[in-house]
Image (cartoon, rainbow, N blue to C red; front, side, top):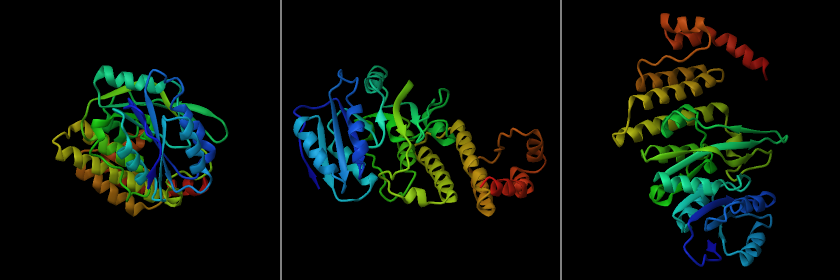
Length: 329
């Protein structure tokens, strides 16, 4: 591994960008870290994870003319190792992660850091602007009325890396887990949120998520994983979060309720792929929240849940759901 270029003074903010063969996107990602953020002393640490598309030559050239950009070169070990390497190199008091094919919204970094400073929070999170492959743009508004870990459990807070900013001290003992093939962002977000640190919400989009057909740094593992495997992984992460809260004596009833809702969401979606696995996941939900009943939009299904149980209801409607799923392709 090697590093070139050193910041001449201690920066206020370190933006960590892992990249692998994303030369066509990388320049815009880097520039977005500075756009509208002149009030901050920003360093951008780009960890190249063994690119073979000219990214390394581009980064060397860029660093020669701009000492705010610090390239770090390593062999191809994956996004998690790259993020951990970037975190070990970071000198800023505040940390931001950004994938190399996404961008920060102009000036949003100033807003995030100011919010962290004035609120004395350890973590900030904001809304996310999404650009689809066909050019359509829309904004996902993060939940206003739940705590961070509950929002992650139930899916009302997205966990893409660039949604969050951190005080460096808050995450100094954490690592991105290299053993996880996908859902890495959720795993790290659960780790952070389960610490119970003070959080501030940014009431605006802070980053742009660019959806495209090309590979991302996490390779093709996620795209090759079945829906069933992804849903199971998300349920596992919720259980992990509950356990971490319990170990820190931070577990409260609303966390359990949010976890049950989140686990039900993924179990319900998995039922059409593997009903026996759904039943096992339902048993896991009941162990965490024995009195849990899902919220149904259909009154008849709600009544069936009360007369029997959600497990029995799902058995009854499974054939219909299976046919509908097959017809939808």
